[in-house]
Length: 383
Image 1 (tube, rainbow, N blue to C red):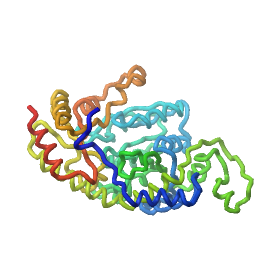
Image 2: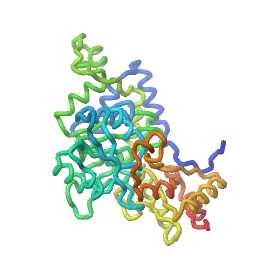
Image 3: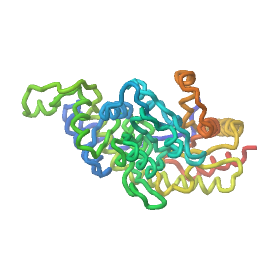
Image 4: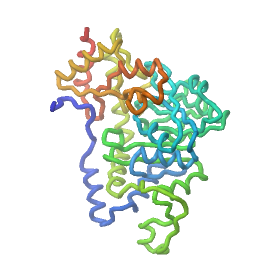
C-alpha cells in the first residue's frame, strides 16, 4: 500500500474535537440528545433555515426527503449521473425511476437545465441537482422549472456546506445558502467532507408542512424521543407513522459542532488553494480546471481538472502516484455501473467524457502552496 506523501484529504482535527468527544463521555448520554439539538440549532442558523435535522448519513437524509414529499412507485426523479450513487439508489428504493440528465459542460459538471426541461414528463415528481465540488448548480433556472411544472426540488448539497448561491444576473435565489433553496436540502459529514464527523448528515427545510413528518420519520415515527422522556416529558409515546432509525448520536453531533466552528475559515483556505491551482494551470493546453472562474463562490470541496484525453489522465495519475501524491475520481458515471448499465442504456455525451477525463487532486486546509505548485508542474509536464 502506498504511503502518500501528499494525501487527497486530511482532517482538520485537534483539541477542539477531542474536548467535544470528552464532553459527551462525561455527560454519560450517548444517544440523540442535547448535542444533537445544539448542532441542529447552530447549523440551521448558519443556513438561515427554519428546520435542520441531524441524521445518520446524507443517504438517510435523501431517503427521508423522498419519503417526506411522497416519491413512490412510477414517479420519475431527474438527477445527474455525475454523482455518488446514493441519490440514484434512494430513488430506486422508493420504487421510483431515476432519470439522468447531462451536465452543462466539462468545466461546469452540474445539471443542464435545458436538458432537464426536455426530460420532464407527467410522471416527473422531483429534480435533484448536485452542487458538484462545492459549486452550485444553475438554481435560478431549476427553481423556475420546478415552479412552472409543480415539481419538488431536493438539493444534494453534500459538497457545498457553507456556500451561497451566486447568480451572475442577480436572479433569485441569489444569496441563499446551498441546501436552503429548494424544498429540502441534504448534507454529508463523511470523513472527507469540509465538515467531517466520520459519519452523519443533515436534512434542512424551510417548509413547516414537512418538518414534523421528517422529525418523526427519523426515529421510528415516535412522538417523543428518549431524551425527552428521560428529562421529565410524559413517559409514554405514540407511533404516528412508519419511520426509520436515522438518528445521529451525541459523539458525532459534538464533533460536528467543533467542525462547524472551523467551517468558514476552512472553506476560505480551500478557495485560496484553488486560486493557486488556477495560477499553476494557467495556459496549460492539456488541462481544464472546473469552475476556475467561480472560485469566490465555492465551498472549495474538490479540486478537479479535466484532461484532453483519457490517456493524458492515465499518465497524470501514474506520474502523481510515482511522486506519492494521491488522486481520485469524482465520479464514475452512474450509467456505467453494472447495476445501472442495462437498465438505463441512454448515453450522456458530456457525462461520459467527464467521467473518463477528470481527475481529483489534493485539497484540504492543511495543504501547502508548495505541494500545489509541485502538482501543477507535474501536470504541465505530461506529454
